[in-house]
Length: 138
Image (cartoon, rainbow, N blue to C red):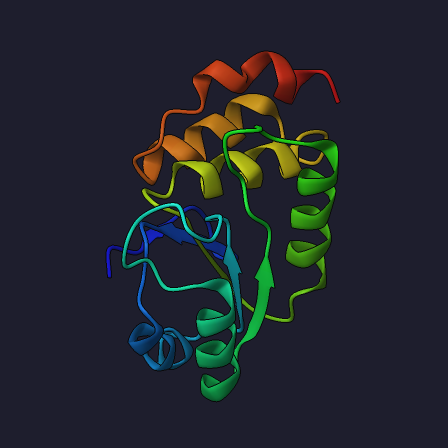
């Protein structure tokens, strides 16, 4: 797994496998957010498979798929609710980690200064500078 820490509460990564869930639990994560739509690529584990693996490992699981239709306000609100409701660190994944970082960044608009959001994402290896206008509007 290529885990990239955004802050003490959120980390992101590219696609993981069901077998990675126990390691996430052992690393201290309490919740997993899957931002990858089912069927995006051949061989990709389904959300149902990932949810079962998360449950078996004792992790909370949320499916907030971000596909070609783009980001919706509902996705941002759902991400915000999961992050705020988690009792421990949250692990988010998609194909590359970019969509997970995008939803995290947008969910933090109005809670953190825009430049701090962009900086935290950059520290994890994701360029969110294109979102500055959106992050500053909240």
